[in-house]
Amino acid sequence: MTDSNLFSLLSRAQSLLDKGFATLPLAPSQSLDSQAAEILNEAATRLHDNYPYEHPLYAGQMLKPPHPIARAAYALAMSINPNNHALDGGRASSAMEIEAVAALAKMFSWPQHLGHLTSGGTFANLEALWIAGQLVPGKKIVASDQAHYTHSRISAVLGLHFVSIPSDDTGRMDLVALEAELATDKIGTVVVTLGTTAIGSVDPLDRILALREKYGFRIHVDAAYGGYFTLASNLAPQVRAAYDAIPQVDSVVIDPHKHGLQPYGCGAVLFRDPTVGHFYKHDSPYTYFSSKELHLGEISLECSRAGASAVALWATQRLLPYMPGGTFARGLESGRNAALELNHHVAADTRFMTPLSPPQLDIVFFAARDPHTTPTPESSSALAQRIFDQAAQLDLHLALANLPIRFFPPGSFPGHSTGTVTCLRSVLMKPEHFEWIDPIWQRLVQATQEALRS
Image (cartoon, rainbow, N blue to C red):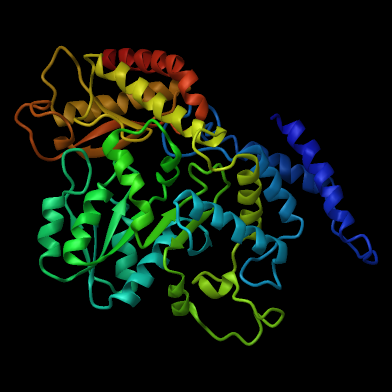
């Protein structure tokens, strides 16, 4: 959909929305003049100072453009600017949020749930760990050393003791190390990451559930990045087993503003046991005077929340339902296929080194090397930086990540088995990326040739 088509559809929808308030007497409204036009033009010019996040040649960080219907629905809702903290502030958008969150719960095969949207995964994870601290006070929170840093930070904010569990050589939580901590009987919650933000590794949730039977603890799944892959049909068997175990966990976080085609910020937290809602109870002298029903604001630590986010997500779900084999699911599968294809090209080239584990979702990372010399972490890191810079000159935008050497086969860096190396990293999360692998690879090869000559 072109922007002109989007604006045309939005204009017609706006007219329909305006008719819903046509019985009101006319009131003064603000308009934009020539000065405003100049300011908007200046803003547009200033925004040139960005990477082309929406283009397939942007294959760096996990930045995915919102779907046109999400943009249109968000803009439409902004003419009202609803606040989903209370029914008084967002009646229709609150109902849409309930429906949108129910669609997420259904995707995870939860027949019942308690949940709501948040400003993003950080706050969603905060709520999940806050509930965990209420249910198992005094117990520790554990997560993999490849989990998002937000978990240790949030635990500190909440006054909870956090323990980092080592990962194995594929970036997944080491279950031997985990069980050693569980044996102390001091662990209350295990954070399981389904799709780490660095390399897309998927913790073995199915095997961690077996440990829960033995030791007893809560399981919180941080699927902010990778949650939607539960719909994909082309996952490796061990990854598929982890996703199939989601219905048995206690809480899940997912970010629709990552793979869910939504504008920032739109996260979500869901609890399998709706009775945890009683921990949120509070007394407000003014917020809920128009409704006796339990409202989203009464089950959220966040107060003001953008109702427009709920409208955008609801509209996107109506157009692209969460169903295996559907258009939305095929987009995820396409991104994963793109990652596998790029990894295949990289693995066959002597100028690159691939990790022990192939892509588990849609993130590819690899180290660079001069095939005529013995690689060291320092020389590889410097070459990766030069390739990164040269690729940008060719309009190919990658990312850099400092990752453990142990993620690569033994002997990749002779004499070095510990420490880190700066790697090139690519998140191929756009459905179009698969069709663009050849142009991406051609530019990467050209950038590498230039970097080796410099």
